[in-house]
Length: 289
Length: 298
Image (cartoon, rainbow over all chains, first blue to last red; front, side, top):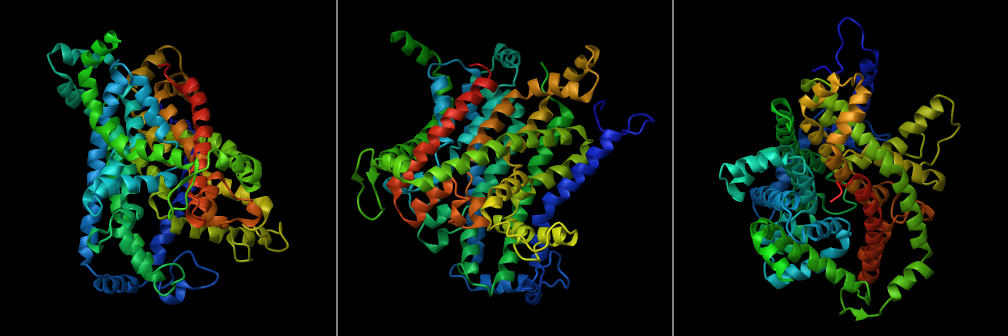
């Protein structure tokens, strides 16, 4: 690694050290909300309402987590149902979304068919229309399709993600054409080319997209509120809102802090896995012309 | 015409690949956007059926709605600072991270991406604490201790500081998908290119950055730029969380909070749709420029 910031030879790398200091300071500041979240989840009631508020917990307690277990015990459907729904919905959105975005990105990047530019611009334009306004028309469409109260209503509207297609198309642009031609000369069809060349080359993009689409799906309270009416179709963010009890309820601040912390754990896990994937690609290859 | 058809048939496999995406996209995005554009020409309060009123919403928006003009001015002010600065910042941070040894990279990536992971509630609590207007707010406390301020300053209520505070906070929490895309793109740059560059006399790190790295990640740069524009012009959540809705004298009012106001507080969906269409036009215009500068030319 010639271009690393490590100490070069015997000379002290002054610029490198300053960079490290700045990066670390800035990084720790960015971590602050997460640390605050963790610390709040362990605060006893007396500290939650302290004024001025304290950043760090003084006398940590797990009472908030016990309260959470009690609160979840009183829900209408078993709490595991919310967890199950959340995992099914988020998992399906991530896997299906990544697959069809990659499938769409491949021809848009590498094939020269008619309407290519038009289709691409149309998908990019869709990124720019405020989603808040399309929610009601989207509900009307879902209602017409008769999929209200099914998993389809929670999954299908979010599978065709313009961001994912755009990201993967940009990465697919970097795949050298010679590579694709080489496998085709060896007799591979389009489908096989897609699986043995395009998908492996898109790995960093797939991992990045999986992360952002998981975060969006996992934390979205909206779709289950609107597209389902029965309690056993609701997801974790809805359960969290129920625990919260609406605006102005202060009694459960600690419980909510504990629940939010637990909600964050799967997200962090997905972050770890996806970034490991991105970093691994780095270690092994890099695209070669 | 028939030549076009033969071309389409020749490339039919390409369309098969596109089909699943386009089908779902048409049903759940194109049709709803179409309906919204239609609604922008109607009076629609969700309860009654939409009533056609032609260009009225647009006329109202540009001629009579002074708050909207304030919102446009605020949004542009916000976007012109956070757009370029946030963009350059997230690229440079991603680049710094790609320069340090592998084993440390993960930790820094986690740091910078944390704001996107943590719940927005936790984030706004931290910011409200920092900028709180009493003497216990962290920034007031420091400034008073160091003697810069005599009495606490109302950062989030004073119309002179609302916009700067919003800009600082959004820059701080800016590392979103653009940052991740840069990071992943930078990992893709081939080692061979740097070695070839070294032979051609590329010596310094900034030379590598300018002559090798940036040209190699152009597709990711375009992606990041487009999303930066979309994000900067759609700013709303931070404003509502920090300075409230409506903000004092509309000093933190943006096009998106204006839309939110009409869509979910006043339930005038037709008017909200018109705002969305205008916002859309702004973005399409800006993105034309971006594709011209950073696009690969096709």
